[in-house]
Picture 1 (cartoon, rainbow, N blue to C red):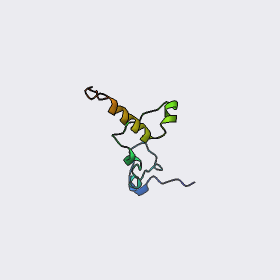
Picture 2: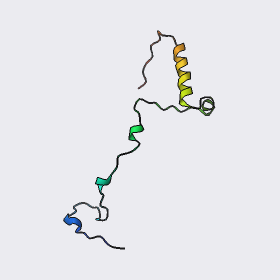
Picture 3: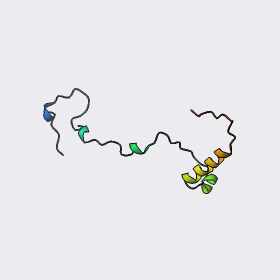
Picture 4: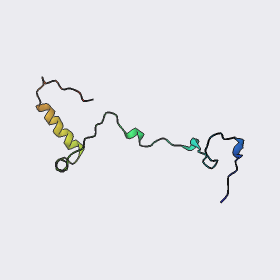
Length: 81
């Protein structure tokens, strides 16, 4: 195994990192999943018996919308923090 030279590119290192740990951040890539995370979404965990009935998000949303329309209009709802 070849040892790397301490005089790589003539830069003197003042930190404790060994010269073989030279990180080239010019080749770094952004997180490809960062754009998929929406800030206006809420994750809700369903119990197993509920998830047997509501198998996808569309069915859950449809049931919740029907429940919302059945609620009285004059009830003030507090926003969750």
